[in-house]
Image (cartoon, rainbow, N blue to C red):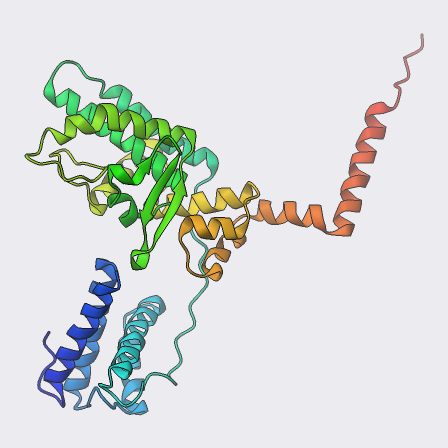
Length: 344
């Protein structure tokens, strides 16, 4: 880490490294560690360049840093950087590296509430069909290359079905092992954020897709590598398929399905949660399946579907029920009324 030669620069670098190591030990993702490192190194470099001590920056200095941070960056990025700094100073306070958290009284920019992008059930089916059609096109024709392409197609069907059936994060999907999947019980054991384990469920189509891939596709891919990496999803060389590879394959299927840009593995997770709630699932059940620590995180999905809100309103509000009953009565009267035969 390069933080210049300002007050306490060496100790700042050491404190940041200790903090990041603590985060890693708690199971923070590579993405989180990279983001926090970028934010903290930028902060320390700014303090050093402006002659401020990181252990006791003044409110004026912090406001000046926040102003510089906001230049050319969105509010979401600014909030993420501030979250990294707050977490760092909480750690530094606990470790007695600083006397107190100088950011405690600094307000966080209000974030616009964004609803997650969600596929309709029909769009999800189109994505699955695109993966299945790719498998039909790549049917084995007796060559090693054709067999590999067919195995990859079977894997892609398993990826889409599993991501949608279990609502997995992309990192969770990439980290699955064969042993973490119990097809007989329709369960998958997931290691989520903070290395917390949970059980998610698999429907019949996902179980069938995984069984076919494990029986017919994965052995073909595993033979392409010197050693089996042990993970469930393998790439065209027989090595572990990472998050980047999953994104690339899903984007290819998105194009084949005629879906708009922006559809990602996380879109399938959002769709999983929304479709469950639309189907009447309890919010706390969805929270458990998603692995959310706070129910507030799951509650965003209750704002996604106007159809679900309308159905709940119609079923619960007394005036809405009266209106519905009246409409049904009118319809019944109209259909039951005898029609008069024409004379003549």
